[in-house]
Image (cartoon, rainbow, N blue to C red; front, side, top):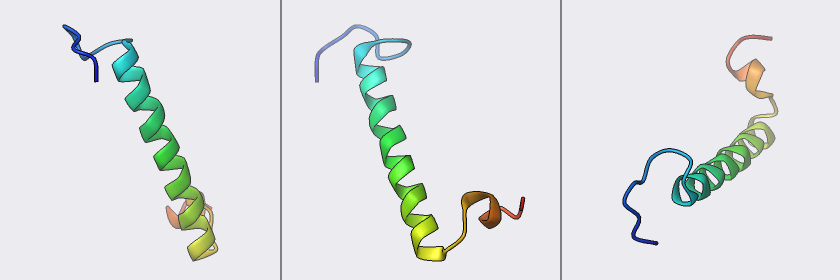
Length: 47
């Protein structure tokens, strides 16, 4: 981890973590759909 003055905004540090968390959320969403047999909208009661 680089020592940067700011950790907020459009910095490399923030964008790397944003991408990692987005990939993690996507994988969790796909796994949840696979395990339950329902899509996310069905799980939320929207369909």
